[in-house]
Length: 197
Image (cartoon, rainbow, N blue to C red; front, top):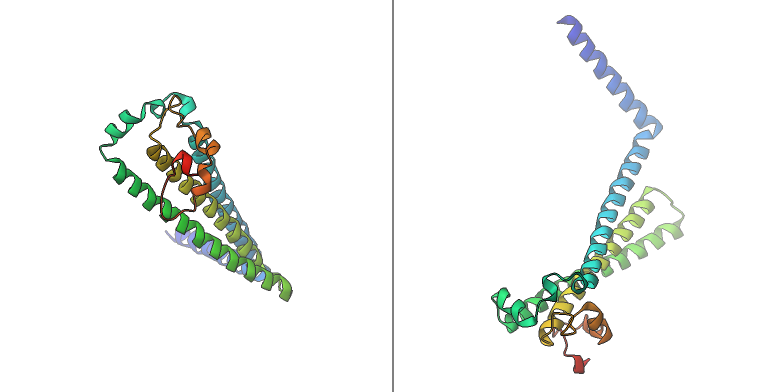
């Protein structure tokens, strides 16, 4: 028993000595920086991969021959909602993602002004790295919000034009060709008819 307690005390002393050494030399700060950068990079990587998958989903839905290639009437019947309800739901969700994108843009502007202030003052410390990583993360959030708003605009465009399949010209390529992406920032309406764009 005495050996176990003495070994525990020895481990505690070594742990305390190690912590004290880390704090005195600044190694703990460096470890914290590296852990923060690694976590931010992992989070950013996750966001970018999700963004890529959303973009691929938008672009490749109709080429896969899945349910996205079904006629429009069958898709509406299966949704169990009328067109106006679907359009109002798409508008709500599009507005939500546009607001998220706007908030992230405002945060990025404040962060950029703070970064410039730090750089101009000549105080280059860990805060600069934190601000820079936060700017990159908020840009990723803004890009994700834009893609989500665009996906709801695309779905509303399909509803307004009563098209879903390749035969009905309801692909993402048709959406882009008809200029549907121009109305993404329209807060009053989700989806435009082909002739109104």
